[in-house]
Image 1 (cartoon, rainbow, N blue to C red):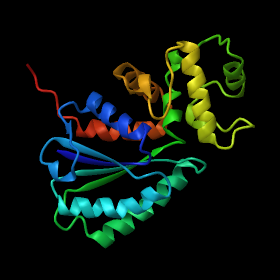
Image 2: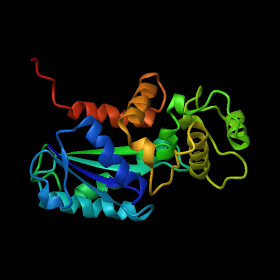
Image 3: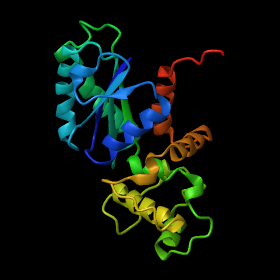
Image 4: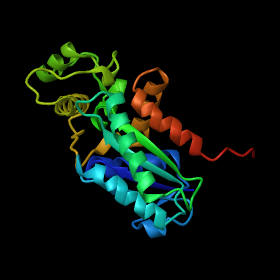
Length: 235
């Protein structure tokens, strides 16, 4: 099985998907070239942000047509200010057009595409780790964020934007940074160095949050990956 990931950014997502794939599909190894997708491997490429990644969909499909060993194509992008449904429809339309233009399925009838919408961004998912949110914050900023929206008890995907922040994504990022620092002063989150959120224990906590009914857009990714997990053999 070979997987190709087109992710939106060139900082957080390229690191995130490489590490998380290792937690779920440890039998897959990362490769640096599409041509090396020759069996139980995965490849991750950045689309260079919005709107560049939209154009990259077509180019990625041309890569995949030339290398039909790839079984699954994942497009992983933020919804930002759009609703989940709006962003999914936008990318699904572009993907369908690109698949028709490239005829990528002609030589690979089992090829499948998956659109993963990070609603509203990857940091929104990371806010779903309940125990990383201190029960009784002391940071004035975190207290203000919690009064606006308590991510410990409410689904982070439903959180809007606190006045004073330009976008939902910028607020969710600020909330995450403050939440992690309150938990442990050593947990410095940046997009270039995501740190703790890449670890298996953090991933497992987010999976638990999904199982509780929250983080629906992340659950789409996890459910898809679960279908790719090799069945366990009896000893």
